[in-house]
Length: 483
Image (cartoon, rainbow, N blue to C red; front, side):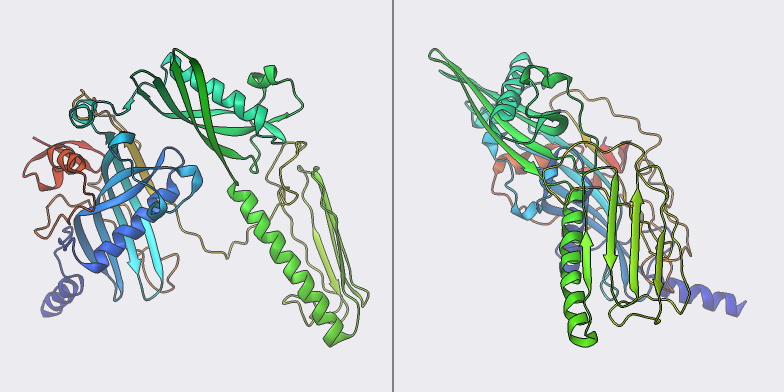
């Protein structure tokens, strides 16, 4: 009995809080602020639509120690929308927050992040964000002539988008035409001249720029991993003197192309290193003959005169291929792999793509390689997350129901105890507890913005002051309304 009591005391002291309770912490603590910044970085990288969020202030924080050096943070972060689209992959610190003239969007993200500084691990487990525009009525009181948001299906919005897309395809000189992905934002501004400002995303199609531009609407979107996407801002003005269109588009390199570019640069560096090492230390020629083509077949022949030969034969997208490495003298001095006399090995690769790859790309390094993944390579799961775009608080709202969303039921722990940590050998992964509802006495932190309007809507909005409620009702993922 004494032994059991002793174990319970040790457990309680080691964890610092009763089971199932997340202790509050301070929003002014440097470690909590750093955790919020890291969570903001990771949330933005997860987003595939919309705009990058900027960290406005830490609104509430709880934390649980995990092991000797780890901490699980439960963060409530007030955020503001920036004018950077998520396709840009920019850091939120480098993006401009929308001012009153850009019709601001504000909100909150709740996030659970595990940080272990000793092992250099930072892992986002969950996030749930809800954002909404500042009510038009509030903007009109401060700035009657400022642009206001309008519906994306507005006829003038659609017209402005079509004019902008046609202008881009005519003047961009890209190898392929681009087609609409999504209209992401639209505002209008009246007066002697009426302005329609429309923001939209575009994606590369399979049609070359020699195609009749009248047929662009029939072009299929390029589904290849190297397809380029872009973000456009079109401003269409109308006055008694006529119409005018301004257009600005940014084209972004796909992640696959960036990785392929890095791989090619690394290969070139290694080729140079191989040649130098061979000539200096071995006294024999070491040449590589690489043939790269944008076709389903991709062949590489590497000739090594001193009985060291690699034959790579890649024959199409629906076949497996083998690497047969032979070597007569054990390990090669400048390769980390090798075989004893007569030893060979084969890798059977299942190729990922089952379509013919016939379209051209903007860069020569954008062609398909099929790299097999080794089972010993560790990987972590992507965080569970959701973003809600809500109407302004002066409009009625029906709460969405997401029974299948993993973050929609914060009452259940999401990670099993004693599950091995994927990044720290010998340690277990933390158990993610239900998101705390208690408000820390040392929160929220001070606002960074000087805008009285932004401060006002955060204070008045019933959704984003829920952490301080005594009786929160109506859950929205990890959010709750005040009654």
